[in-house]
Image (tube, rainbow, N blue to C red; front, side, top):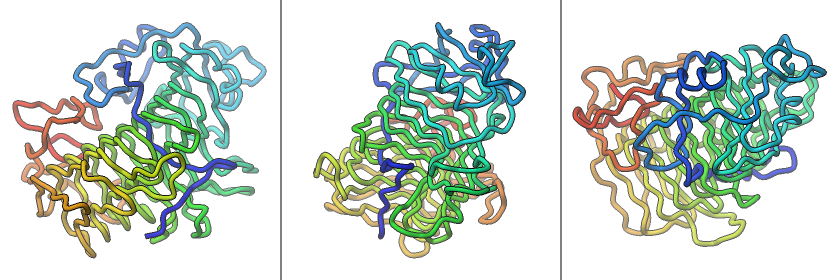
Length: 412
């Protein structure tokens, strides 16, 4: 297996960090609208920013001291107010520099290739919110000069509900990275990242759809409820879906048709919770491993892989490189991964595994947006465990303990 050290511009991509361990946040559409005067659409009331591994409540995003607005009909010489919004995300990034700031982005198409560097705090995060889920669409600019659609270096930053569409490459530098973060305590939630790095050369420069990086010593970020697909040239083992090299959580994501691994831990990855994801139609399903270390040589350890569907890939769930004996694999459905379903090390055994077709409502290897929800007869219904699981699924539907937690990103 060839592992990439994917780099946005001058950076190396790595880590997934586990969101602000001191904060419990959720984006509730009605409450956020009341607090800010901005109507949010497409978000379930229980969907949102969860900055702790075992969230059991859904607080609402607090009103922030500073608010900026972006619209395709705005102007970068405007004040960035609701009445006079900015036009570009790059201009908003120059304004949104203080903790306790929300940037509301109206539906429309926006050039990517920008950087956000400001830091929030545990008590006053910086929020970037598409006011309609997937309504704010980020695309390659006419003359691209960066490898990354969105390069975030700040701490305590939340990126919520954007579409990153790399399908229409124009001139200049091709994107190899979708959403990248090198900071700590960040949240990447509810985004749709697709058709990124599909036409790049397959080499060790690598790439990924979502990457959270340890190279700048980032820790503790949550990657939650994203849909990621059509990433990298087919079979290119350097381009990943969700790529993690530090501590954090990866929960309720749907990832499919990735050149290499749908979910990949490498470099300094450790203390990661991989819970309730659905991954399919990729070369590798889930890789847990460490190597090419930056600041440690301990290897991937204390990794929990629970309640995931890993279906119809070439390889299922595997440990690679250096791994520890404290990793745990519980209650996953792992089936029809043609080369192997499992490859674990250190004498580890998986438990509670389902080895049958997940019977998804509308599965397809080729459909643009397959239906990965469990059908009424799916064996994943009620077969998951509550440990580390979020209280809602990718759509904000409650994972009701009275009927049992389902396996995968969706609750039936």
